[in-house]
Image (cartoon, rainbow over all chains, first blue to last red; front, side, top):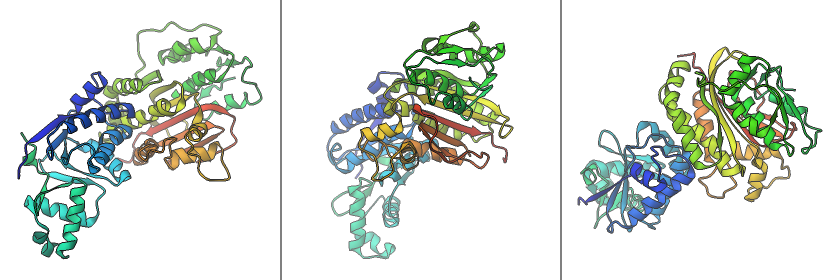
Length: 190
Length: 289
């Protein structure tokens, strides 16, 4: 179930949103302007699509801007206010930014899927142990139904289904008919 | 009278002399015998002038190299607007001081924060790694701390303020290189900022010290948005990692995150009043590498 991806270059959005040649995600005002533009782009996507938010050209980042661009965007996504059932995969968040982004996510109890430099997706932010385990199992398989994971998980199918449901509500795995799909590199690399 | 060595600690002597002086009285700030000023000292002197209703007079340092350094640090560029300068100010030469990462710069809007961080960025990595011997990953956090500290002015002060950054040898306390960030404003101060957003905690005691702890230690902002107020948390986390120091003064109180190399007091109350918020960040040279 590979879906055509759409990539948003966050640095290009930054420059367009503030009409300056900035390369750093700094200040709450800037973050708000960038988020509003990303929201508009996400809303124009077709229903259920995957969007990659590419941070690879971003230099520096501060808490206030990360709170606006990452945390508030994720809250809107989880509430399905902007993505029309779509998913967002973050990419190009370097090791330098990771600690800061993770701290912002943990403060809000949020999590995201980030495509690392090695091409593998990684789950960062606040998730329970069961959520992380289920996410890793789906990622390793590409897709899985609750019944596929129940034995390895060591809990009943209902419990696994509940965990996977939670992950899909948090937009961390994609729900298909009867199974769940990883937000995978193959879906965004083009 | 300004002390011969002007820093965050000795600046209190200046304020102590003004406790009983009404705000509308004209004062003379005498820095003739001052031979050194830290970024905090210089930005606080500018801020002091902004707190006065009557434009104060200022006597510059008599020592040429001190006066010349203050000039290169942009002090007189702004002091000439805020003070009536009595005495000679050396002409500003084209040379920059190699220890100065950022001359005194006004901060009022978000754009100013971008400008400050982008201006300082090329020199920061080399100063932090070569002079302070920190790992290269310290650079990102430094920019974050600087940005968040400056945003405190933009978001909460209600008026513009000043930022300056300098690398120098901190002989008095440790004999090591430090980088100091000073961010001072004469705005509404932390207590009034929290009160304006109805963010005063439910407590019988409410003063500048409690307001400072509420904002700096507990990360409460005047905005109810749960993402707000995390800037101080970020700064403190960064400074803990690199054994740095944070001190924030507002009104009549001051709180500090005191690292092991320093013997500062964590919280001071009943200090001489000073309008606005004055913030000090110090990052020391790493010696146990």
